[in-house]
Structure formats: structure tokens, C-alpha cells
Image (cartoon, rainbow, N blue to C red; front, top):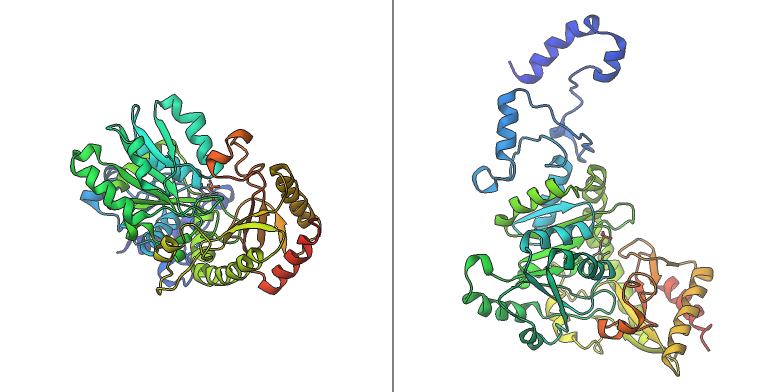
Length: 441
Ligand SMILES: *Cc1c(COP(=O)(O)O)cnc(C)c1O
């Protein structure tokens, strides 16, 4: 007799044996409607804990947890949400697959994924080399918390890889960067960096190997797969382009299978576990629509970047699809969609003209305030990869952690404007931009 049949038989005398209060909790006890194999869309599996059948099976589940080497990762015994459950596990399988990694572990947010991967790769006394330009909260993580752990972070300009020599030493364990970087869209040559790191690693033992970690949030796996280019790990904020609708937070680390167990243990113990309902939404809405959304956003971004570059009130535009981008050749090599097409992403950074830096900054403020009040197709808000086009001022918003006198060395212009293209018809976006730029003297 199968488990299901056994429970069905038991159900027959349960109705009379127990009270309605108890029935309100247990219902029919076992329902045939709970049938994964016949669902077309995965059900939302919102269960913090899992029935273990017997103490023996429970013990086996705990023994198998985070033992990928010996027990694989195919059909785990689910125990408790924080250790793993169906929605997250399905999402992780799909994320690893599209990003060409061996495994993926999700986290509650992009920041949790970043602190997770760096948490397993470093210990007190170690050092991390980063690019100078990074997402503001990542800078905040490094500046506010890592000194407490005695982990030194060395920001250098990674668009020139020779700079590594000035900070590299035996304590260096990780090279961490975003490419394209938030917000100025600097691009780092992952292929060249791989060669360099391989040379350094030749003279180091297994525990002291340097890992390359790339935050691929801006590009999304549609436009760029850093692991294929030579990175050891990719991290994403799933909150952005992969989630795609601005409804759920999430993060992920993708990389080699041998690091899966450490990431699962770290997530279990530090507790930054992705909410099942968010995992379900990203699995059901985000990933299936990623290519469609990205293709549309990139097509629009190319037209908008060209429009801005030719506009008399714009000083300069940074967009990986423009020949004027300082790393345009690397962008053409790295940012390629699943079919070999150049896919320079949906993010644009630009600076307005002004006779002084103060005037440039003031013009940026005037433009963004005007857009906030008047533009139907653009919203003044942080975040990106949304259905709606979002515009923001990095120096006072996403990167406000950087003091005014440090903006320049972090690659951020005090008046820089960040534009995250949405799904609107591009003609409508151009209409609003053209109209808004008229406000600038
Ligand atoms: C938003 C963002 C993050 C942080 O992601 P959250 O999901 O907000 O924690 C990290 N890196 C980049 C490049 C981002 O844009």
C-alpha cells in the first residue's frame, strides 16, 4: 500500500474521531489535489516545515543537508524552509542553468547574496580587491562592517588591470566587481583578469586561491554570463532585471558545485533565506519573461542613448552600446545574448552640460524634479529592470553613502543621472525626454 493510500484509509474514521476545531487545522488530512506532477505551473509551496514520516527519515534528512558531494542535490528530504524547499530549489536549478553555472543558492536580497559569497570566501586577515565604482550598499558593507571583521577592502580602477599589482599581496582572496558597474557602467575585462588570476594562483595552494566574483545585476544572464568569460562566481540582485516586475526582493550566488554546501550552511546559520512566495514569483513571472523584456528594453535603450548623445544639452552619455563608451570593444565581446547578438543592456548614465560642476549638478536636479512631476512614462525612483522606466540621481540616492569629496574617485559625477529603461514604447519615452530636456537653459 502506498503512503497516499494508507493515509486515505485512515481518513475514513478521522472525521468522527476528532473535533471540528482540530479539523479546521488538518482538513482532509491528505488531499489528492496536492499533486505536483499534474501542475502546469508550479504551486506556491509555502510551508515552513515538512512532514518527515519517521524519525529515521528525519535523521537522514539532517544528515544529507549540505552534503552535495555524497548525497547530490536532486531529491532532498525537505526539513525546514531555511534549509531548502521546493520553490527555491526549482528557482536555483533554473538560475544555474541560464547562467551556465554548476549550482545556485538564493538569498533574501542581492545584498544577502553578496555578503553570503564573501562570507564563505574570506576570514579575518584576508583582503578583497574591488573596482572603485560599486553599488552604494556594497560600498557601505565594505566600509561599515568589514573593518570589524578585520577584512581589508582595496578599491582600485579595474578598467586597467595593471593596477592590481599595486595592492595584490598574499592575503588577497577575492577580486570583486560589477560589470557594467553601478552607476557609471564601467566595464571590466573578465577574460583578461582570468588569465592574470590563473598566473597568480599557480603559485598558491588550494586554500589560498584567489576567486573572481562578478555582480552581474546590470546585465542579467540574458546579456552576459560571467562564468563563461572566466569568473568563479556570479551574484545577482533578483530584485532587479531577473525579477522584472518590481514586486519581490531576492538574490543569488551562482558558481561551482563544491561551494554549494558552504553557501547552504551560511544561509541556514545567518538566516537570509529567500521567501518562498518571492521564489515562486521569480520562477513563474520573472525568468519566463526575461528574454522578452530584455530584448525590448535593450532595443529602447540603444535608441535613447543615441538620442541623448546627440542632444545639445547633454555633456556625455555612458552606454555600453555606444562607440563612445571607453570599453566599447570589451562590451562587444562580453555582452552577448543567448544567440550571439550584441546585448548592451538597459542601463544608461548621462551628465548634463553646465559651465561649472555646481551648474551641472543643479541642471541634473532640475531635470529629475521636472520628470518626477511631469513625465508620464518615467518615474523618479531607485531600482532597475522594472516594467516602468526609472530615473534617479546616484550621488544623492543609491550612492549617497559616498561623501561629496569622494564621488570623483568612485567614478561618480555629482550631477550624473541614471536611467533604467522599462517596457514602454520607445517613442513615448523619447517624447517625455525631449519635452523634459527643454526645461534646461
Ligand atoms: C540593487 C543592487 C544590489 C543589491 O540588491 P538588493 O536586492 O537591493 O539587495 C547589488 N548590486 C547591484 C549592482 C544592484 O543594482
